[in-house]
Image 1 (cartoon, helix red, strand yellow):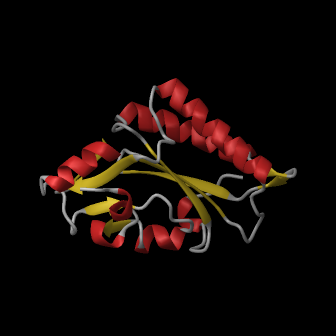
Image 2: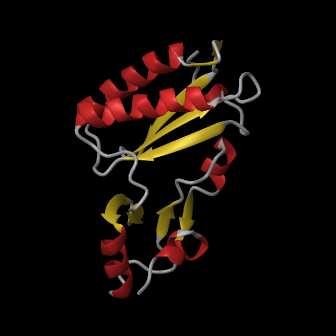
Length: 162
């Protein structure tokens, strides 16, 4: 069942899918409508999942479930992955490439390959204090506390050689 994101508790399980490009207004509207329709019928072992989503910065699709209501199962997670794959195909975007790095350049989000991020780091265009997005976080609370972090505090630093 779809509910407003504000009603999802802080300990909710989340998944963050990052687009390889910025989504435009009509795309955000269409994806939002599709997400609502998917979440209205999303189940785990025939039990409704209390779920919501947000699209942040025009790049990030955040899916969340109230795990206190119903836990996600392997099959329900597979259903969400298939939903995300359908969005990728319909809108010609990539949402599941974990080796695309997103960072803030002033107030703008930039998304680059791991290699390009390494190049930017070696040129000091990005640096230890550059804000990066940790899409590996798992709870709504972490979304507010640990999603946007300086590079020096993120896993990104350990996978970049420069």
